[in-house]
Length: 485
Ligand SMILES: [Zn+2]
Image (tube, rainbow, N blue to C red; front, side, top):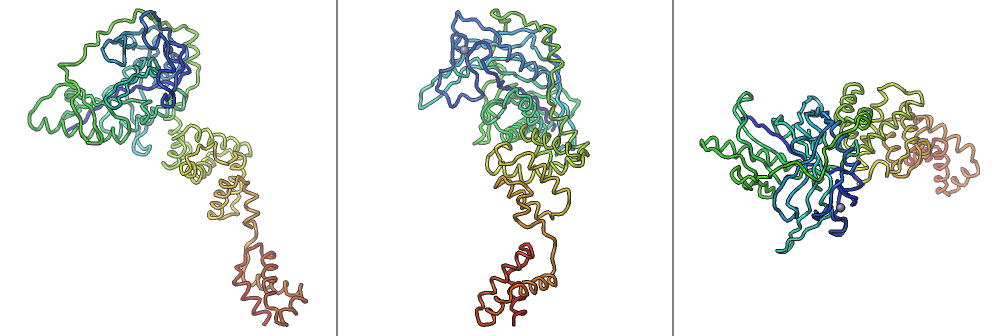
């Protein structure tokens, strides 16, 4: 049977302050003591009033733009009411009836950048996070540091047909929010929370099957396992002619099973109504104009260019697109290289090749960012120029790069040290040079002939100098023994 999947993704925005107060916002509160970044607003004191942060709004608008959404001039906030200890006033501020960003779409690549897919976005609405419950040895504690931090919830249409599409889409979404400095969106750190809606049907033209929402998923591996498990579970039910209700299930990844959280019957009635403490949000023309002119980065476009214009393979794209710092580094080197009169796009391939190995490999081994590695950009440019001259073989180039990374020296310094710039030499030439050494040192030759055979090491040393270190000492020894016999 055919899978149909839709997503609801909460992304924690990277802003200085929380959504409706001046308290500090953090992508991670783990390193802070609980309840140290709180105020009457984010602890929902009855008399405290929320004020929307301009920065949060701007980040949400940029996100809307990168998702190709319609940015609505007029939008509003709503109250979502439910009772839970992490929400002491009994409501959360969100956008249900008139979200700011609606009807978008995201293009991304599948199957190692060979096929393109488009996913439609229903809306990307602002929402403020709840407090965090901490359960410890039978005790439940509440940390309000997270309360009132800004989220955007992105709701997609059920456009996905398999787990791979979901994962590649989420990777693209991570790149979008990271490259545009909107969020860190680390799944493992719950900076991006994904609820997966899964249903199955026989044909693409059939109506959607009953949908099941899967929660508690925080890695790509978990997404794949949860979807596959749920598909099999639903198929088994349909095979037995059993029906089931729309429901929410909890994914237990260690057991590889899901549990019923609530069915449609006991679905919560959230009693949504317009938030009376916040006015209708009207975006001034100036804000909309500024947003229009603001430059945003669309990773999909960059990948497309790498693929179609630069002709990069998947290894190069993977190495460059995983991290904004690496991508910036690549573009800077490209600029530096171009300044030296190497404009052609084909040179970009050379740069990508050297960045993907050994630079990115070394980064990953040492858990360092590209800018933390001892690798000056002008030095890489110099190396690339040397590589292009074609005087060094690939193995030598690799040695030079490794040395550059370990020592921070320049390519020309290392080439000199390693005698890589010396001309090639053959055995006849070596023998001729060895004869020269003997002719230049008649007194030492006499010493040798009188029995001081250790002087042979002096001759070998001299020969090494004359051959730029390119002679094998053992061969040199044999040559001298022959000449001196
Ligand atoms: Zn606060």
